[in-house]
Length: 458
Image 1 (cartoon, rainbow, N blue to C red):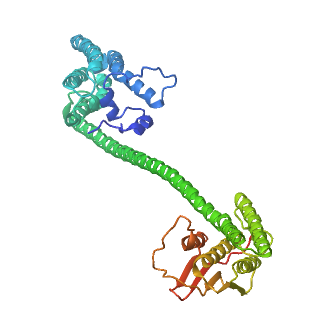
Image 2 (image 1 turned 180 degrees about the vertical axis):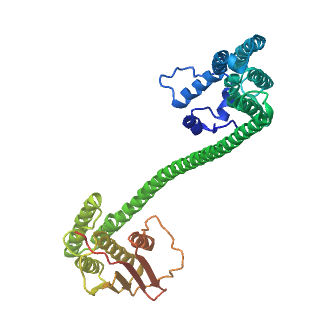
Image 3 (image 1 turned 180 degrees about the horizontal axis):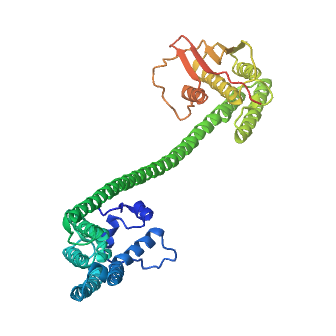
């Protein structure tokens, strides 16, 4: 049974002005431990604890002195003779010596112990005897209410509190022993009141201690949740950094592939065309024909130089610098047909309009790569290119009547080989498009690129 009116727990300590049971067990009879570094601003809880420590050390002596003064003043009223005073004087000296001994002993014996139990019941015996001699010595006995949990094991706390209540009830009933039947009735009533108050205060203290434990558990759970949250944040930060690194590496790799494709579609194809024109010049005795092919080689060189400069700046095709996509495709198809001698037709269906520059560049590069493949591999006599504007998408179809191939067969990559179908498909997928190829040996080839219809924001 906890001591009356003293709820346990840190919050209860600050609110009630009395140390909790847990604090009492921890600090029993000695000041709280101090840090090596002095603090200039002690907390309110520390101040309250220190004051209660002073009370537990010196309070019994002060109350004993106060009870002695009141007993001396009322000695004639209660019929306390010189012989009783002689006994009381001896008990006062014994009580003083007991308290002085305990002040020193408590520093080395914190918490409930056998010496604490002996001290408590010896003090109670002295208080009981003094109160028997004079009821006003009950002020010394009241300390039993405040020291039970500090000094006694848990199983003896109710015994100590009840013993203290007996002394208190005797003093309140007019002194011990009770006189007559009425005196015993009053004593019994006072004892019942004291025990009832102890029970009520113990119940309140237990509820307060339960609330304190619940708060402590809640705080522990919150701290654990905060720690888990912080760990999750740290893991997310590490994952975010890893994703950024992977995105950066993926971006670098994608840019490398894009630059490689741009070089292949511009400079490499231009150099291939120049080599083809120079080979014709080297093999023909006709000066006029040689001059025409030299002019074409010069034009291809200038075009390739412009494409190289454009790739360095923003990778946009030169043909789209001043012309729209249909115009650039038409010029590209016508120039390719003139250079290769193959009939090449270009058709636009639907309502054309300005597209996003990335979409226009992608479709033009796919057309250039498909025409280059047709010139190198198809041996076609006719090529048709169709640009179709439809609801939500744009389709580019390149068809030839060449020798065709098996799309399921694995292509052999040579040192002079280009990006081919793989590069065209990668370009289309980069802008959320698709590329399909239909071909068969001897049946020609059809390449179809479908990309989203996204207008130019500028």
